[in-house]
Length: 453
View (cartoon, rainbow, N blue to C red):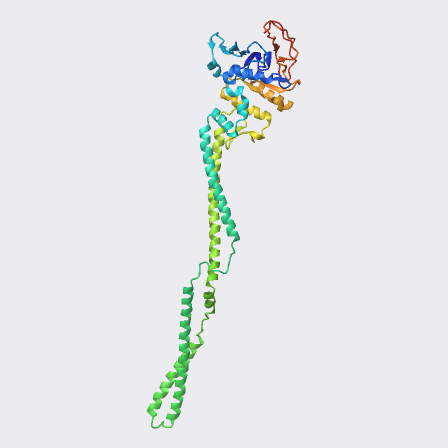
């Protein structure tokens, strides 16, 4: 990875004269009060390496007659200079060949010199950059669309099943009601059939009365004929035979009449009168049964979609698991970065910097440095944690912090390094300080020596 080996800046923005040799790995913190030139150093680096689109609107230090001068030596020996009235770019590679901005663009990652551009991006933009880096963006989009579609279908089925179940629970059940709706015409037909049978029974009862009348008449005839028995002997025998047959008919009719039972039509008449109420209960029971069946069917479909949703999510997980992610525990879910289970706005400041740095580094693996402004928002513990991570990853970070504490590698005041013995020159150029920071809690800077710049 290519890093910044040495840096010399003169008369740029608030910087008068500064020379820095940043740590190869870890944090180099530029400290000092506000408006003393800290950010000017980072802006100068961005201008020197990123091109004129990063040129400050007022690059020339106010009050200086000498134009800005930038001299940056990279770890691969590449020398980058901007000097002269127009601050023209000059790039010389280790072999002494001249180059230009195109050469710098081949290894300088834009977001490395403008990290806030990444950190201020939307959650989706951050996730898109990561997916671009690991090369699974299109596949993940397809899986997320499939996941969303299955989830919405399952959600609709679940809601519908719950509604059906609730409807069934709220329905009153009538155990006495028949399973099917009752037909009034059928009830009337049943009633007519019973009335017909009852009429036949009545006819048979009337037949008994008639036979009884015939018996009585026969007895009268017998009495009357007895007086004439001598004359009507033949008739007597005939009548006696007839009487015996009639008595047998009477006995049979009486026995049959004992077995006759009239059927009541009261229940049918009541049912005919209440057919609407009965059918209402039947329909209510049928609605309840159907709602329960529908709910069970929808729940089965819901469970099937749950399994399908699980398969899609497992595919997403496998896709990201097998991808070359910049950090362990870093992932994308629903279009947002997730690190250690937390979305961006729930990450600690240190984790946000780790995620940003790791992703930016992978955009251009040859770019081994980043610029960070305004680290005063971080406490010392977080700074130390982040610095150790940078060292572990072999990355270089040059950062600013409104502080004069021991965590600062150098302190800038009024465009100079604090503690430097300055000597005016005939060209009105103050000599810069030479600073060799040693880490997040560096030694105090040494005095600049004449002839070293």
